[in-house]
Image 1 (cartoon, helix red, strand yellow):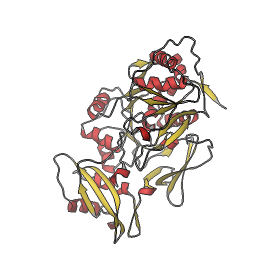
Image 2 (cartoon, helix red, strand yellow):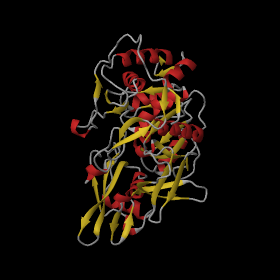
Image 3 (spheres, one colour):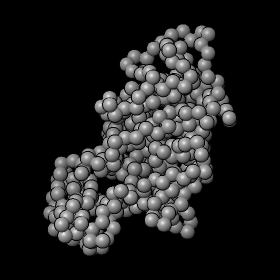
Image 4 (tube, rainbow, N blue to C red):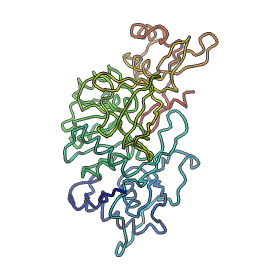
Length: 426
C-alpha cells in the first residue's frame, strides 16, 4: 500500500488564497467541503456515492467531500435515464448538506490502490460502461500530463465539458493535485468560452474538433493567455489545424480513454506535427499486428500495471514514437474487400468550405457488402451538391473511400462533450 497526503487539504494548506474552482479559493473550498462531508450522514468508507449535480462549484465540493469520507465518487450523467446510471449506495443531489464539522473524522491520506471514482465511458459506440479508477490512476495521469505539457505551477484550465466524463472530471482532479485553478462552465456556450479566453482568464482549454471549429468560426483570435487548446475525441482535419494556426490558437492533439484515466498521448501545445503526440512517461503504447492500439501502465484501470488494454482503436506509430489514431476498429467499413476508416473520410469532407460537420458510416449493400455513406451539416449560407462533394473527395481519397451516398441533415448526434454518437447514426 502506498499513501499520499489527501489532495484538497494539502492544496488548502499550500495555497489558501489561490482560486481553486472559479473564484472560490482553496481555503473556502476546503471549509465548504468539510461542512458538506459532515452532513453526509450514513456514508462510510468504501461506499459508492453518486454525484447527481450539474457542473460547477457544488460538484467540486461534493467530489472532495465524498473523498474526505473515504468513499468512492460516482459522477452521474444527468442526461441519461436512471437505468443507465451506475448503481450506488448514496446519492448527492440538490442542495448540499451543511453541518458543523467539529469532531468530524476525515481521511487525511489517499491510498493509491484504492478506488477513487467510477466514471462511465462516453457511449459513442454503444451503451456507456462504468470504469473504476484508483487514486493512483489519477495521480499518475496528472503527473504524466503535467510533464508532457510542461505545465506551469499555476495552470488555469477552462472546463466546458461534462464533469461526469473523464475529460471534464480530470480538470477538477488536476487542479487539486497541482494547486491550479479549474474554470468550470455549467455547459458548453461558444460565446461564453470565447469571452473567457479573450479576457485572458484561461491558460489551457480542453476541446474536441467540433467545439474547436465553433470557437474559430465565432471569431476567436490570439487569446492572450492561452498556451494550449488540447483537442481530443478524434482526429483533427488539416484545414482546421491551419485555421487554428492562422488564428493564433496553439493546438495540442491528444489521444485518451476513460479506461486510461484520460490522456494516453499528447503533443506539446503548438507542436504542429501530425498525429496525437507521444505517450505520457508513465504509459506504454504499442500497435498490434492488426493495427489495434494497446496501452499499459500506471494510468490504466485495473490492478495489474503490466496488463495491456486493447483499446479497440486503430493507429500507427512513427519512428519518433508519435501516435496517429486512424479510427475505431469496430467502425471500420469493409467495402468490396477494402477497409475504410470513417474518420479519414470525415476529415476530408470537413475540409470542404460548405461543410460544417460530417459523419461517415457503412450501410449494408448487396454489391459491395457495405457502402460508404456520409451525412453532412452545411455551414449557414452555403450550398453544394453530392456530385461536387464526391469530386472534392476523389481528389484526396482512393476511389473505394469516396462516399457513394451523401445526405444533407440539420444536425448530427453528439455527446455533451461534442463527440460523435456513432451508435445513433445506425
